[in-house]
Image (cartoon, rainbow, N blue to C red):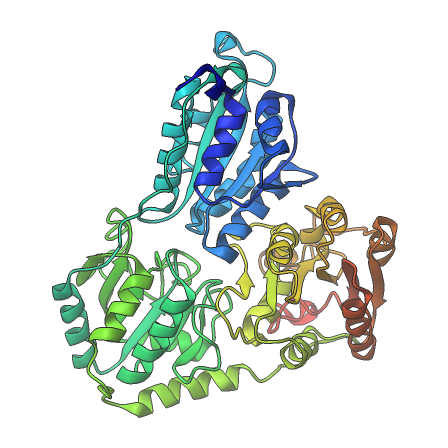
Length: 550
């Protein structure tokens, strides 16, 4: 080493990111990490400036979902960190590899409640896989290497690293470390054989897929295995793009508003292969489809984190392995044409097809028709994003996802996710259609990020289901406290005018004919777009009408 090798910590940090393959980061700038911003200035890393830290963190999480890489966000201390915590929570519950870098007060000011000081270990401890504060500039490569290993190994998830100002600005000749080397995640051949035997001997087997660690290749292998063995496949909550929905073995999503026929099939299965899914509240209909702690079904639980297995349900067979890798191992090991009963798949698929038939809802503009039109006109590789709200029920029920990572949605149920996720997806895949579905309440959680889309030419199309209320809460309210609406009404802006004010394309949509025309104009505009869809407040969900709800 020579004195010419010395750089400030911010430059070393960015060199470490480049060595880990990072191509894009999302941030809201802050004086607490000026050295890192300086390091990004002349780097090859694309820096996306966001409007609020929650949006930046969600963009980083969605980037990781869409690409399989680690998502990276930078935020400032105190309020910046607390704002970003929403995206960290999404990454944790969605098993998404992500690193949040937070500027921190100088190390000689710690524990004085200095300006915007927060104890990040205490704050993020329950929300992240690992939380640390870098205490020496020359240890930056060590901490960052470990962060990339932790974020991607086992069950993927978020890591939070705090960066004291003086650590970032100090000089060091430390060199970045090579790219993280990850375990294969494969299971023992004996485990694969035992799983095959249990599935082959079952009369009513069922596979439920979800969780992290999947890939397009793994999804293809899953489809090959399911077809070969004649086993129906259900997708856990918001994991509907793991298997092409046109595949004859795909039978729907095991999530909110589940097809009653599918719910019965889960309940009556004799063997369930839970492949990557945690079998959480949403996927088990409040822990009723499988009864804890010992389900009536024989349960094969394959999960990358051994501590997750047995956490709620005692399995018949437990396998610690990466779910995607295990799917490929199953496909390679299964005897050809080993399906025992083709009728079980055909019957399950028939139930799914019947559930796909639109049920008419009130109003001149009907969400079931909107989704049907999207099915017809969007390419197989179009990406659809959404946050939380009853509007998403139409999307989950009626849209058919045809390719890997064409669905970006938070299994954590976070509102406001759809817009940041759409921006991240469009930046990564500018030639693909990216459609954000949002409710009027959901969109306004992050509406300022439409400016980020404008700034970077992320020509997304936002479809706002505008019914003037927080529909999900209004639905629950009507069930428990009929005709006593409280705290759920919204007075909204002109969303089309808002798009125009930012420099995008906006249109107000009141009928199905309006929607078809406006979508064509939006796609042709070559701008970020908002379609303000005026839907009937009575249409709370595909099955619930406000006036008749009891």
